Image (cartoon, rainbow over all chains, first blue to last red):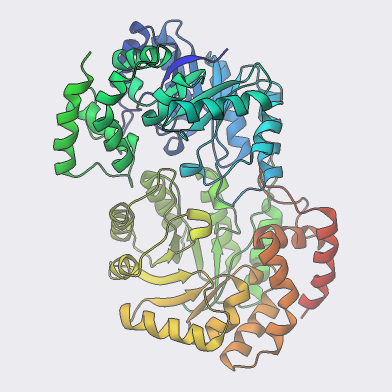
Length: 291
Length: 291
C-alpha cells in the first residue's frame, strides 16, 4: 500500500560526477527520520538527465542506506526499452516500487501511453505508481485513460499534480477518483504547495519535494493536514511561493547547497542555478524549515 | 554553407536491434542520388530514443556510406554533458555539421537555452544548425533569443518549422530573418508540406523528411520551387495530408516498411505504427512518389 509521506531527494551532481557521499547521507537522514518512503531518481532526483549506469548505482546505494525504508524508483525514459531496463535494474537492487511518467519526444497518443503502462505493469513484480506531470512530460491523461491504466495489474498509486488549493475542492477530486479507481490504487499529490489541501481532503500519499531535504517539518505538515489544522501550511507559504516562481528543483537544490549538504549547485546543465538575489530570498525562508 | 536539400533518413530499428544493413543501404541511395546533405539521427532518425553507442555507430556507418556527401548529425539530449559527448562522437566520425534542438525535461529558461548553444558552439569545430521544433521540444524561441544564438561562433543555419503555406508569406518571413541574422546563417525550413512555399519564397535549405526515402521527387520539388512552378507540390498534397494527420515519422516509417526497405515497422516503442486502414491510404499515395 503506497501511502503516507514519500520524500523525493536530490541527486547531488555536477558536470563531472555524482556526489555519492552527499547522496547516501541524504538517504540515511530520511531513513533516520522514519519517513514512509523514499523515491530515488524522481524529477527532483534529475532522473531524466542520468544514464542507465548512474541510475542503477543510485538505486543500489539508496536501498543500502535506506535500511529498510521502502525505496521507490523513477524508471521513466523516452524509449520503452530503456524503461524496461530501468525497471529491471530497480527490481534487481531491491526497490519496493517504481514510478513511471510517459516521457516522449514524439508526442504520444493515448493508445501508445496505454501500451507503455500495459507492458511495464506486466513486466513488473513490484507496485507501479502512475506519474501524471504535464509540466515536464507535456502529456495530458484523460480521466478515461487514467482509469483504464489504473485497472492494469500492479498499478498501485496515481501521482497527481497539485490541482486543488482548498481542502473542500481536494475532497471533491478525491471522491471523484475513488469512484473510478480500483480500491488498491492510492491517490497521491505532488506539488508541495497543494499537499496540505490534498491530504486534508482525503488523498492517501504526499509525494514530496520538501521532505527530501526537510523530513521533520514535512511530517509535521502531513500530520497537521490529517488533523485538519492549517497553521504550518500558512507558515510555509513563502516556501511555496519560491517553488512556484523558480521550480521546486531549483529551489531545493539551492537550499541543499546553502546548507552545505551538497558541494555544488547540483543542477545538470543546461539547467542553471537561481540568480544571486533569489539565493538571498531562499536563505531567508530556510529559517522557517528548521524543526 | 548549409543550403540546398538535406535528407533526414529513418533509423531502421526494432526493440532488439538497429537494422544496420537497411540503414547503410538508405544512406548509399541518398549519396547516389547526389543529395546536398544527409542528416543522420534527426527527429526522423529517432535520435531521442537511441543511446550514445548507437548514435556513434550510426554516424560512423553513415559517413562511410555517404562517400563524400556531407553528413549532418543530430546531437540533442536532455543533458548538456550528453550533447557534448554526441558532438565529440560526431566530429570524431567525420560529420560535416551538427543539428541541435534544446531538449529538456525541466522547462528551460531563455538564459539556459542560450547557455547551451554558447557552450556547444564553442566546443564545436563544425557548423551548428539551430533546430527550432516546439512540437517535440516544447521550447519556444523568442525572435530575440534566436538572433542572439545566431550570432554565436559556428552557428551556420536555423531550421524553422513550416510557418508559411504561401510563397509571399514565406518571402516576408525570409526577409524578416535576413534583417536579423548574420549573413553566414542560412534559413532552413522543415515541415515538408511548407517546403515549396519556403524555398520559392527565398529560404536557403529544405531539411526534408520525404527526401530521406524519396530523394528524386524531393529534388524535383526543390527545383520546381526555385523555378516557382507549383505543380509537383500540388500533386504531393495527399502526402502532406498524411504527414499532418499522423506525423511524418509514422508515415515514412510505414512507407519504408511497405516498400520492403525496412524489415519492420521501424518505430521505437512506445511509438506504434499507424492503423491498418491508414496503411492502405499510405500505400495509395506511394504511387505519387515514384519518379
